[in-house]
Length: 285
Image 1 (cartoon, rainbow, N blue to C red):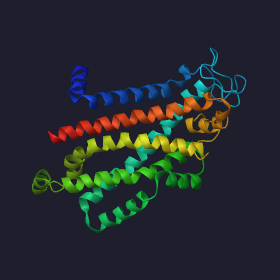
Image 2 (cartoon, helix red, strand yellow):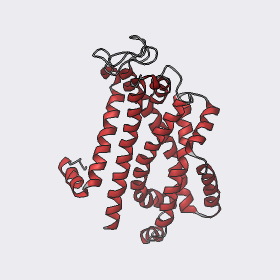
Image 3 (cartoon, rainbow, N blue to C red):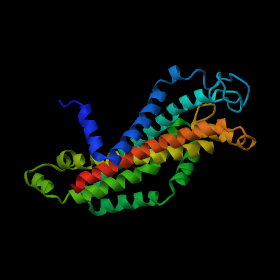
Image 4 (cartoon, rainbow, N blue to C red):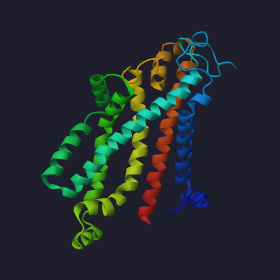
C-alpha cells in the first residue's frame, strides 16, 4: 500500500517551479476555508443568525469585522457562510460529475447515433450562459441548499461531458485499447480499467476550475435571492444586504463577504491552473 511522501511531494512542487507554487497556494486557501466550514462552531464567537449588537457597528475588539445591517456579527456569518457555500458547491459538483462523466465515457466510446444525440443535448445546454441558466433553474425549483445544488449541477454537466468525451474519442483508438479488445476484454472492462484511469487527471483539472466558476455563480444566485433562504449565513446574501450601505461609508458588511468569495474562487482557480500546467508539462515530456 502506497503512503503519501511529504518530501517527495515538496520536491515535485519545487521541480514544477511557479506552477507548483500556484497549486500549493490554491490548496492552502481551499484547505483553510474547508477548516472554517468544518469547525465553524469553534471559530465563530457568536450565533450567526442572532442579533448581538447595534446595526452596522464598525469593527471593534468586540466585533472584529463589525456587525451587519440588523446587528449580527459579520465575522461569525462569514465563518458559517463558508459551510453553506462549500456544501452547495461540493454537492452540485458531485451531482454534475455523477451524470456528466458516465455520459461522456459512454458517448465517446460507443459513438454513432447515441453520441450525436447526447452531444446535441449537451451542446444545447452549454449554449446558455451559465448564470442565466442557473437563474432559470433556481427560479423554477425555489430557494434551498438542495435546489441550488441542482441548478448549479445542470450548468456544469455539459462541461464534464465534453471534456471526458473528447478524451475518450482519442483514447479508444489507441493500441492498448485495441489490444485489450483483441484479448477478449468486455466494453465495460475496457472503460473501467483502461480508459477511465487515463481521463482521471483531466477530470481533476476540470473539477477545480469548475468549482471556481461555481462559487461566483452561487454568489450571484444568493445576491439575487435565489439561493438559500434567510437568515441562513451566505456570502452572496450578506453582500446584497450590505451593498445599500456601502456608499454611505459602511464598507465592512460588503468587504468581508466579498473578499471571501474572491479568495475562495482564486484558491480553486490557482489549484486548477497549477494542475493544468503541471499535467501539460508532463504530457509534453
